[in-house]
Length: 177
Image: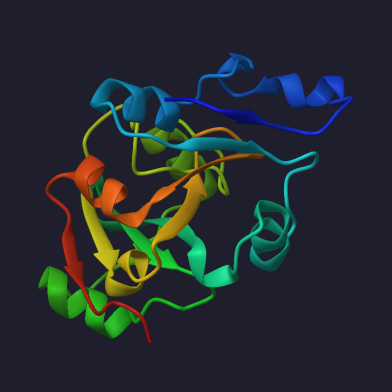
């Protein structure tokens, strides 16, 4: 199920993204459609400059916005961590959960190469290749959440229980500070 919500008079630059011409379909939207999971698509008039602005424009609180952060743990080993709101990831907890001592954030070029998305648009759904997924417990606390769609300036809004279904095998734990 797909609903398009957007403002009037979208500027032409919004029609371009790293995938070419923007359509109503995004990587996350296609993945959710394939699974038969309901969601709403939200398109910002301009890519939001902050978490708070994204939440406000979507009619949500910051705690309802799920961020996807890509980490590199070794030679071409990547982990995608989901966390809600402005919470910060505890590097110590994350390393302990993974059983490793070294970890770093993926570079901008690595994010684009591994996920096919720009930073700020990454979604755990519709990735070009499977990744190890970890979700902080905060991701599933709110009934409704929103997250990147795989396309800059667009987000999917859905029930957190539906996100859990869509993710399948996701490791959940206390990864926030």
